[in-house]
Amino acid sequence: MKNFPSILGSGNCFFDNYQLWLIFKRVILFLNRRNLISSTNHFTSFPKISIILPTYNSNLQFLRKAIDSVLTQNYPHWELCVIDDCSNSSILIQFLKELSALDSRIKVYFRLENGHISKASNDGIKYSTGEYISFLDHDDVLERNALFRVVEAINKYPKAVLFYSDEDKLNRFGIRVSPHFKPDWNYDLFLGYNYLCHFVVIKKGYADLVGGFREGYEGAQDYDFLLRIIEKIDSSQIIHIPEILYHWRMIKGSASLNQDEKSYAKLATEKLLMDHFNRLNIDASLRFFEKEKLFQPVYFLPKKEPLVSIIIPTRDRYKLVKICIESLIKFTKYSKYEIILIDNGSQEFESLNYFDSLKTYDSRIKIVRHDRPFNFSELNNIGARNAKGDILLLLNNDTEIFQPDWLTEMVSVQIQNNVGIVGAKLLYSDNLVQHAGVLIGTGGVAGQINHLMPGNASGYFNRAIIRQSFSAVTGACLMIPSILYQKVGGLNEEKLAVAFNDIDLCLKVKQLGLRVVWTPHAVMYHHESLSRGQEDTLEKKKRFQSEVNYMISTWSTDRYLDPAYNPNLNRSKANFYLNWSVR
Image (cartoon, rainbow, N blue to C red; front, side, top):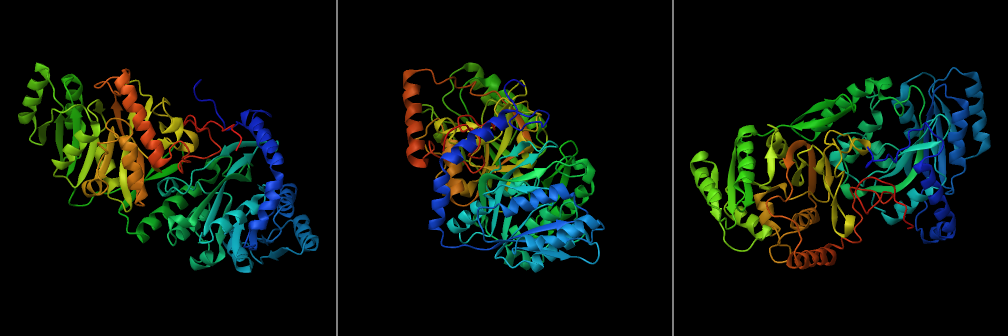
């Protein structure tokens, strides 16, 4: 589409936007090269990092490049543990025998029998002597400053256990393509796929603690290994280095080129995720997305389903709210809910007549009259005080339900551990995306991610179809436990009467260490702001600017680096375009 040019690079051309961006960044790096050297003076720790490189009948040309990328690292305290898994290539074996003489930091071990990747990697862990370990595939390449950047992060976060970086791929011409600019640690996204992938560095003691790699998970053994380590540590001990430090070669037969060629990875992934659920007593199954080759958890509801109080503020425009309420009742499969309609001073006869008829339309509907001037925060807070449910759902009157399982999905995510807020996927009536998560810092305060993208599109690295944590979700459809809503003071009536009250609420919840989860599996239409109109009067503009100022002064949204995004991507719009700013 015209509005969504790819930043990934197809690999079919030698020069694209990403290639230009790389040149731009090289120039910036060259101009700042003195800072790179002098910053080592501030290091208090210079740990040894063991790089484990399994080989098996490897392509000698690519293997040389992999090893060269280690030898040319600008951080010197490393060891390279090459584990040959009983190759039968005499040329390769001779090359490996000569490696140790090349550099004393290179150690080569020959297995007497072929044991596949898990056994070879475990031998690498066993023989490594570094405080930290990492892994390099025999045909991939490290960026020259990869280890330096990791040690820089180790010094900054000495209690951290796991470090990971961004990555890209090398096409058959050796051209860098398909950059994967990752978010900071995102548990819900990680359950969709192993987005950490490369380059990962781990404290060796934790690799020993979980027993290394498990046999029987080949094709996804690294995913299983990381997941078992992550279960043992706090999320604050997982550090993202937002820089491409690893280049993954696209070779026929490799999962980096074609997942179909490693179909056994599907079975291993399903097994490891179910193991994870069983270890953590998570009541869930898995759903497989055939096109994207990924799984999503399907969480089960408890036997005693919680009551959900659906709060809908409205004023007149009864045809609009009628669509909202009647579609909700008609399509929603989850039945344990109440609807609290907050009538903000309706005057039209048709609206008043319709609201009166709702009292007998469905016993789960309650009408609360409030005649004060419009204050979205106040209206929802009134609804919360009149709610009986364990869970609140803030819902705009200009939404339209068409999916039976939307509420089941949201409740099932809400009841998971450490989940504070759940948001849904909202579409315009033409099926373009209105809401798929909110990024803080876009446009000064916040912006919608993937806005106006086709509703059925997968998005950048499938992020439009995978559950994930964001800093915020829209209040047009926002779920939160009632007790938590009260704890953080609900929506801010005084400072954020109309705009950004949902963002403020999410940030308050996030500040408590709870996750704000967006799910693409709860979908509805949102005919945005049809009932209220636009910010087009002097009074409204003044009020809106006051709300912007509050968000900037309270949350520093103008400087906020959203952990769900990446500093290498454009902050002016949440569209995964490349960031061309000098920083």
